[in-house]
Image (cartoon, rainbow, N blue to C red):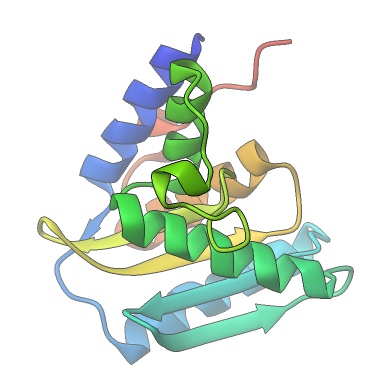
Length: 166
């Protein structure tokens, strides 16, 4: 798949993976399932689920490092700024050749061009973000999408990204 195809597929994911509502119980159920899956796969994730600036679920799993928490913070900022998955923004900037820096008001200390942050949408409103950090960015993104599919009852095979082309 090309970068353009990946971007189109991520836009489809953003359309299909929406919530009717989202509260503390939903965050706990989703986060707990993500944690259990990550532990079973021995993935060194930090998992963060929040609405607005309010954290609702957080886990730092074995093998994660303090830097993962900072990556999560920066990915969350990117999702809120663009109201899109952080991996889509990463790919769009890669495709455009534009700089992602302070000249555009985005200090890399506060924003990350990296996959793993995904908007929690209720209808068309971005109400929060679910984010992981710990493995390569495409794998971070794919893990979040897979878990959201499971939680929302969306067939993962219909919207998953294919393996990255060499």
